[in-house]
Image (cartoon, rainbow, N blue to C red; front, side):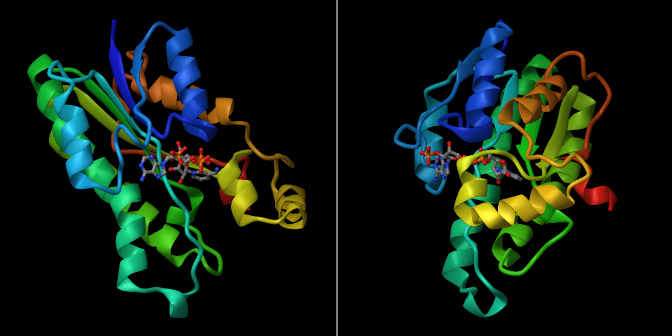
Length: 220
Ligand SMILES: NC(=O)c1ccc[n+]([C@@H]2O[C@H](COP(=O)([O-])OP(=O)(O)OC[C@H]3O[C@@H](n4cnc5c(N)ncnc54)[C@H](OP(=O)(O)O)[C@@H]3O)[C@@H](O)[C@H]2O)c1
């Protein structure tokens, strides 16, 4: 049985990923924030030290999106966004890939966003962090490919989760869906299905890609 370490499994997209992997026979490790706080390097080190056998799959799903305009940006705010959205992913990839190399097998899925390539006002912190995830994905894919470790990122558009309702008013969500080719938000399970493909043995050759799953947002 393959083991997946999943961050952000408590709710939203991560919860859907957790349920899907469990239903398809994976052993899922989905630590809560109390067990592994992603903004704390030593908390991540402590939790991963409790998994001596490593994992075959890593899904870096957790993320935060703090809104700020350019003039509101501070080093502290950038540091906070980068620590959860990027540095935790880096630390977990470093840890997981050590075991994956020994097994000559691994699948890593990072979470990016449409806002890694597109943006709108007050998304500077998020765009900076998620664009860096795309770079991390490409670079890690190149280094790890000789070990049969495939690294990809999913970049969702608008998904029906707390993150979307916290950062957009109902009126804004109505405008967003009116303008989307698919005319609706994605459900978390739809994102989970793509994560599952990338993390499964079915994916045997795709690596280094950031896949936009956005209902056509990036096409218009
Ligand atoms: N929703 C969207 O429309 C959308 C669009 C594009 C990309 N994304 C990306 O997709 C991923 C999942 O988004 P979502 O909408 O499902 O998010 P969400 O509903 O806001 O859930 C965020 C998850 O991240 C966890 N988390 C945040 N900070 C953490 C920390 N310091 N330590 C440990 N866990 C932490 C949360 O744990 P707690 O429950 O403990 O807070 C929660 O499980 C994120 O990377 C997000 O950037 C989402």
